[in-house]
Length: 194
Image (cartoon, rainbow, N blue to C red; front, side, top):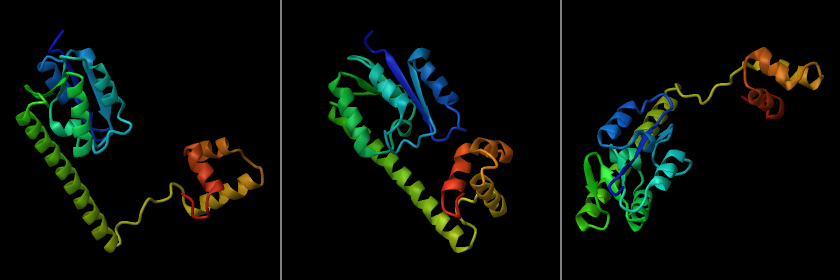
C-alpha cells in the first residue's frame, strides 16, 4: 500500500463548500474514504480541527498526506513545521496537488517552509485589513458591536416575569423564539445583557 494518499480539505466557514477540493483529491487518487474534512476553521491554528487530526492519524509509513493547496493545510509556520516534522518522522511524504515532497530533502523542506511563510503572511495580512476596516467603521459610527437579540422592553419583561415565577426559562425561550441560553443571559447577566 505504499504511496497511498490520505487527503485533507478545509474551508473557513460553514457556508463554504469543499466540493472542489474533494473532487481534486479524488482526481489525485485519494480514495473517498480517506478524505478528511474540516469546516468553519481558518487554518491559523491546529486546535479543534478534528478532520486534520483524523487525517494525520490515518497516515502510515510510505503514505502521502495530500492537500490541494498549502493554505488549506496550515496558515501558521510553527504548526506547519511541527506537523511536517512529525509526518516525516513517521515516514510519510507530503503531497501538494500532484507533487510530492520529502521533508528530509533540503529543497523540499525549503519549498514547504516558504509556502508556510507565505500562508501565514496572507493570514496576517487579512487580519490586518479586517482590523483596519473595523476601526474605520467604528470611527464612523457604523460598528456598534453585537446587538441584543431582544429589545430592552422585552428583556425587562423577561426579567420581571421570571423573577415573579410566572414562567419558566424554557417557556420564555419558546415565546420569544430564542435559545434558552439567550434567556439565561438576560435573566442572570447584567442589565445590559444580550
